Amino acid sequence: MPAFGWVILAFIILGLLKAFKPYLKGKAGELAVAAHAKLYLNERYALLNDLTLPDGQAGTTQIDHILLSPYGIFVIETKNYAGWIFGSERQKAWTQKIYKKTYKFQNPLHQNYKHMKVLEEVLADILEPQFMHSVVVFMPEAEFKTAMPGNVCRGAQWVDYVKGFQQEVIPAVKLRRIQLRIEKEALEKSWKTNRAHVQHLKQKNLSAQNQGAAEHE
Image 1 (cartoon, helix red, strand yellow):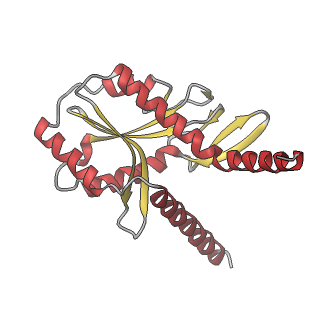
Image 2 (cartoon, one colour; image 1 turned 135 degrees about the vertical axis):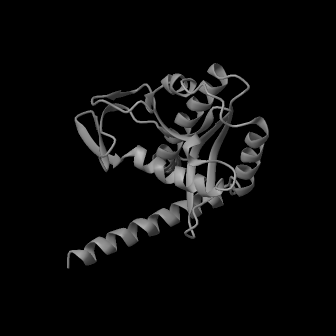
Image 3 (cartoon, helix red, strand yellow; image 1 turned 60 degrees about the vertical axis):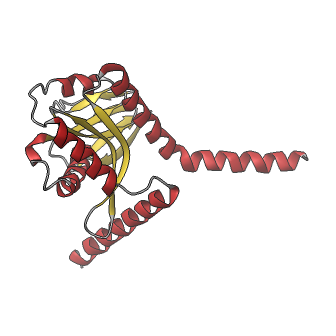
């Protein structure tokens, strides 16, 4: 291949890596959580990964992990962010500071609350909402600079949080029903499903922006 051809190929590869970097970074965080579960939790826990569920509003919600156990159902949101993290339970947006740059991102507790509500609807006739618990997991590269709630963890600390629930509240038969229901309602794992979800989010954000602009007219 001529030298110019190699340059073009290099630009294409770099462009693809840049475009898919957020996706690959997110997947790396999800794989870490899956590894923690395999290493530190026994057979009484079952981890379901990367689930896309209909949200009842002609759209979908994507849940990184759902951990099933006799002690409750844990809905886990993974954040593979590095740097300093600032936030509180009630803040709408949290802050990431890294390499003298500052970024804002949605409060992951609020984000996971939406996931919880969708799952509540899916399991409405099987499970009481009080037996569902929200967990947010940052990777060890993140450093919390503000006090965080107990259900916001770094690295494998989330396992200790989950193990803090020791009262058995879900019988084995019901737990199996829950798993079957979730697997039945979850959409097929495919690029098409992911693309449709992203399009729904873009449309939702655009509608919110338009509404905000109209309110300020």
